[in-house]
Image (cartoon, rainbow, N blue to C red):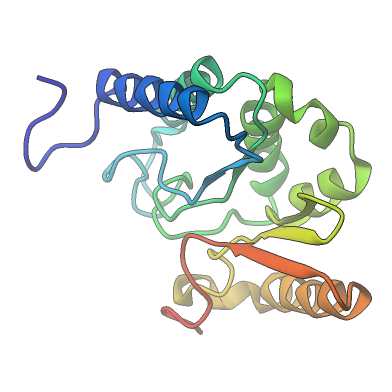
Amino acid sequence: MYSEPGTETSIHMLDKVLQEAAKEEEKSGDEIAAIFLLGDLCRHGLAVDPGTSPTNWPTMKITMQLAIESIVAAFPKVPILPVIGNNDVEYHDQAPTAEQKTDYYTDLWEIWFESVPANAHIAANDDIRQTFMEGGYYKYDLTDDIIVLGLNGMYPFYENYADKAMSDQMIEWVGDTLTQNKGKKFITLTHVYFGNNFY
């Protein structure tokens, strides 16, 4: 049995589902352009409440790395485009503070982009790295006319109202990106949609 009702998905179940999906892709002859991960690679309860010490961050990083490795094993040539879920942060529902964000976004960058062979072109892109390291969001050109916006839904989340500047900066960046790319299509990825628990 791969999992039981009421439990989190096991790594064995994830591997099985991904391998079956890879077989279906091969049978169909269709190529997957990208895999979107819409957050919560970590199970509920790993992200601790603010002020809790120590945190489960080392275990959370391993959890995310294992999930990414499973995807890479099934789809080694497909870019993976993740976004941050409210269970993927060190403190549940909390965007990292200014003091935490360099370490936090560096960890995610290494796991999500640098460790994925098909993401080498993303890891080498200074524009993507800059916005991701600043606030965990990015722009990826999926095709010549389709742009993916990977957004960090933690900043507009109500628990993070004290850092309105970061949320405003990301939302302004979205507006500028849309304005500068008229005529193109957009796919927007976010775990927590803007407006859910909005400050």
